[in-house]
Image (cartoon, rainbow, N blue to C red; front, side, top):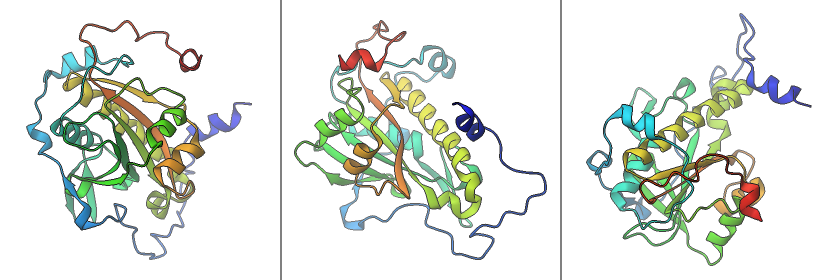
Length: 259
């Protein structure tokens, strides 16, 4: 029963294979970022000006843990900017390539960052998308019942967070180059992104918990993506927590939360 999953984790590149891809066939490269309305951009503060509580990398590595007792107040727009940039921000763009804060196979960077801002100072609660090329955001929706739907979609693992990040895979952005090899390397990519989320949250003195258990169809529908070429792959909830409280770190199960 495990064979399919085990095979997915293995390299599928045979020696000497000539890859027949849309790139090799001369099909124009898809854009690095989904379309957005220039007039709808909400600029974010400079992420490098964020007020970090921890700067020593050894301390951050040592103290990073999944934290689920969140809800100790709101976060600032500066905090939000740093979190989004650390996970999926642009460092430079040149010669048809984009360089971000996390590595990506072939520099394809196939993930878009959506987020629900629940407790962010100066920002209306609602669903937004991060426009990495501009370090800005665009508002998507604040419709009634949206938060409740997302909470149910993540199987109640909301943990009273300030912000929930949803990483949406744009499949063709990677398939254009890597065809059927795309999906394993893209799963590695999103792992890099999520780890930066953990480290960025820890540097800000915040708690973070990554979520792999969610209801695919419901989350995709609420995010407004098609569920085929674009679909959610990974989620993180982030927020302030009571300092010194790590009692929820080991042994937690979402099945307990549902009871």
